[in-house]
Amino acid sequence: MEVNFLRNRNNLIFYFDCDLDHHNVSGLKEKIDKVISKNRPKNIIFDFSRVNFMDSSGVGLVLGRYKNLKSSGGDVKICGLSGEIKRIFMLSGLQKIIPTYTTADEAIVNE
Amino acid sequence: MGYDNEMTTIFTGISENEAFARTVIAAFVSRFNPTVAEITDVKTAVSEAVTNAIIHGYCKDTGMVEVMCAAKNRDIYIEVKDKGVGIADIDKAMTPLFTSKPDMERSGMGFTVMEAFMDSVTVESAPGCGTTVVMKKRLLG
Ligand SMILES: Nc1ncnc2c1ncn2[C@@H]1O[C@H](COP(=O)(O)OP(=O)(O)OP(=O)(O)O)[C@@H](O)[C@H]1O
Ligand SMILES: [Mg+2]
Image 1 (spheres, helix red, strand yellow):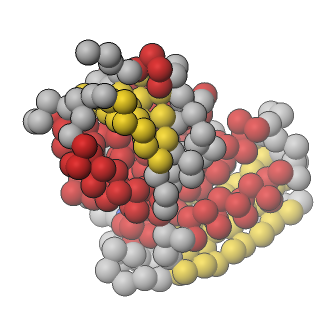
Image 2: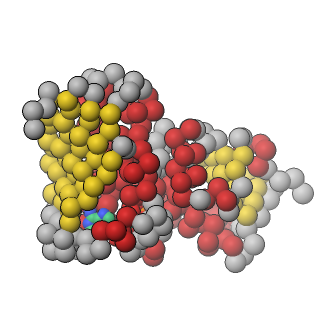
């Protein structure tokens, strides 16, 4: 499972290109965590704009990274949510704790 | 019974088959001219139930997962069945955010998503006897 990311100063943006189900997410978590621990960014953005399908495994992915990073002061943000993906995040209440943006550009912090 | 159309697929409960189950369901339901949103709803609900069978039902030994889908007019009926460990307290299992596997970063949202995306969800299960999830949805188109 490939995961693309982009480093922009203190921002680390992950672009998902596959279905976010349990099978794919299991492989992705490890790769994402490696990139995060190598780069130690302040601001982590997950871009869902290219995701065609997501189930509750996607919620686990975001929530898990949020919990891991809370202690080290890293911020987790999400963007590019289609209608169905937004609905799943809303149901889980995740949007109450994770800031949500339309595009990655809006989520980037310049400092 | 008395469906217009019906299919059953039985596959090994490994995570690679989650995408397979979704694809099969989407192909079956597509014949009834659903909207794109309706297909996504059904695929998501099936993905949740199949994933549960694989990670919870067959947490120890891998077994077979059975997905049955039937239709009468525009009423879609789906059964996802495993012969795994079963569920002792079904009400508790269906409570939003309840998960028995927080260590696996499960969010406890599977049943909540199924209930939100389908018209009805019922669970038949007993410890040691496996689990059957029955879901219904009327396609409005
Ligand atoms: N097929 C099954 N066999 C045995 N136990 C199950 C099965 N399906 C669900 N459960 C139990 O019900 C609980 C809730 O399921 P649900 O899908 O709502 O959440 P989850 O799978 O734990 O997390 P998520 O779906 O958000 O990743 C599970 O944690 C598990 O204990
Ligand atoms: Mg689940």
